[in-house]
Length: 314
Image (tube, rainbow, N blue to C red):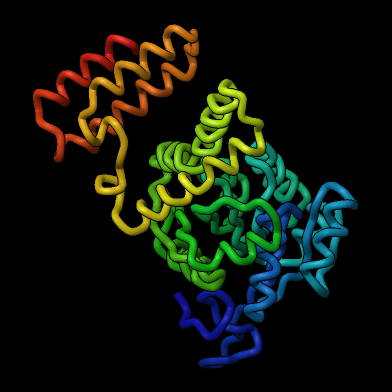
């Protein structure tokens, strides 16, 4: 692999060494949503050349124009792809394979190019048509949640990125790209991507769903939706703070952590009597995971009692 001068681990095309011209990366972003726009803006701030952005709607391109300057903005993925040698696909997962096929069939990908997608769930098979042409393929996924472009620009630096490739040179290049974005690269085997993404969904998306379940419980006792969330947020934030400081085992509090089987029984009986079947399943399932954490501090016999109680209501 050539020595890096600039451009995510690749030398600059304007620099010559031993009589050979060196490559410069010309970035193309396919997908003008929050992530793609943020990635393009960060790359430009780092001095990289973002030459084109493709997105399906004029509205999204108008938003892109506010954040990414001096790039061709188009709804034509092939037109965009032909302008660069590093194509980063940030579309929804279901569109990645078709986007790759469009780029290949439109001759927008050639040998030596890099094609990257940012899906946490998909492997590299969706990019195989480009790989067959001699392009290097990679997946980089930020373990982060993005509500808007401004938040994404702030959140991407410092985030862990799962990096999946099929050879050492591309791995080194992709990890350099992640560092250029300010992220921390972590290698991830392609076979492990689904489990990796499950962990991310549980930690982020289902956490929101869990708090929604808590809101619904509070609405049952007459608390308005907005007040319920306001009441719960300090508890949520305190819990996250404990996780950051102490880790999962020491951050666990509540009836399972105390081995308080009486409280657990009342909770489970209440959920059964109120016919809250879904919440009962959630409560028992998550309490099993809590019990796993509590085993270090709760006696073996009490843990066995709690497990038996939870299984009874599962």
